[in-house]
Length: 291
Image (cartoon, rainbow, N blue to C red; front, side, top):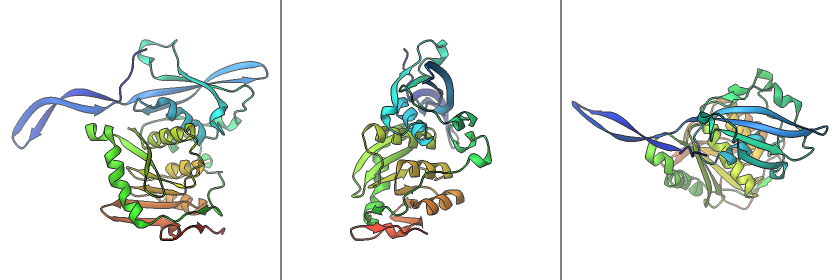
């Protein structure tokens, strides 16, 4: 099977003032990835396409696991029997079709097939087939004790994120999601041309390494925060979600309702805290009270 790399070279013309130079440049690869599910029902194995998303190749298994987790199709990593690339595909599809076989007897919610999972690299919520489907049924982090995190630790996250963004350094075209502990120690990072894909990859990797639920962790994002990014954080049990960019109104509303500390514009020794700022300070722990 041919390997699709996350970065490739292309020839460009660079214009600087009145000077033009032809040279090679590195760009982030964007390719479609299809997820196919296999599952057993009444003694019969079924095979059906679930999702197509535009992503940057690399850590595709993490992406699949994180996506299935975010959509409540799996509840633990052991629900997946195997993941592999499909071999019987067209030449142009090699490396772009994943087969996920679920364990015998694993039940798939019927609502899954009511969803339209065809998404692009910048949008995930648009895959929902109706406005009523845009909801978060997870309980959230209300009434969960979470140790406090100091502002000094938060100030360090952006520089740590930049240090670990290898693909972005070469292309300038990849988003990143990184996992830190409450002392600011770097744990994991995943990159992708899509913001939601980067977070799915991170969550999938964390699930494989038994790091979920991540109630004593922080996630740092390289871009803005949409509703779906908060939804994924809630599902993963992440209490603190920080980002370089701004949150949307729905992201703020969901974070407030589900007990997520949402931080935006975290850069240059400053940040804005939009919800549950009681987790930021000095001390041992805090309990978010129910409404």
